[in-house]
Image (cartoon, rainbow, N blue to C red):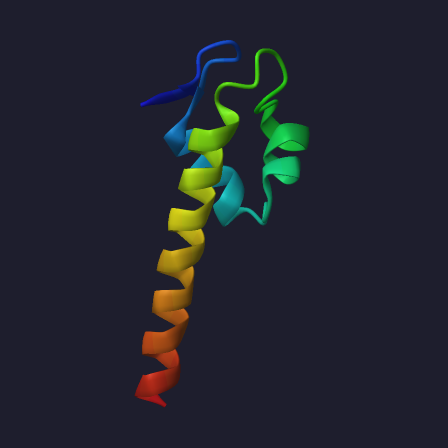
Length: 67
């Protein structure tokens, strides 16, 4: 789905940037241009970021419990 119409950024683009080390909306702004024009995409980008962080924490928790 498109998150930022102004710059043509999708949720997949955001997830890719997060997988490559982005950790904040500021990182997403710097790397992809999120929030660069009208700023309406910032809330959705933050939601994708939080979802990614939750999934990452869950994976870490499962790996820790397996040890």
